[in-house]
Length: 53
Image (cartoon, rainbow, N blue to C red; front, side):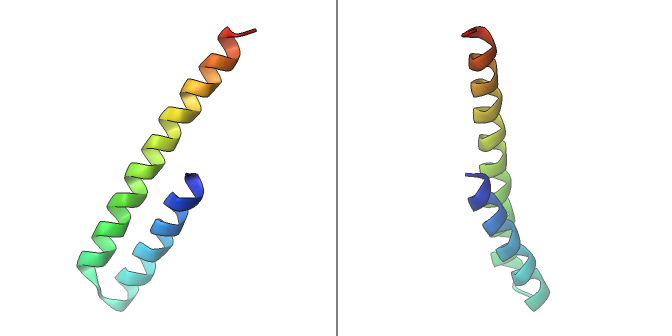
C-alpha cells in the first residue's frame, strides 16, 4: 500500500510539472489517503505484535 501511495505521489509531481493541476491534485489526494491508511494498519499490526507476546 505504501508503494501505491508513492506511485500516486510521483504521478502528482509529474502532472504538476506539466501543468495538469486537477490531475495533480487528485493524485496527491489519493496518495495522502493511501499513506494514512498504511500508517493506521502499521500501528494496528505493531500494537497486535506487542500485545500478543
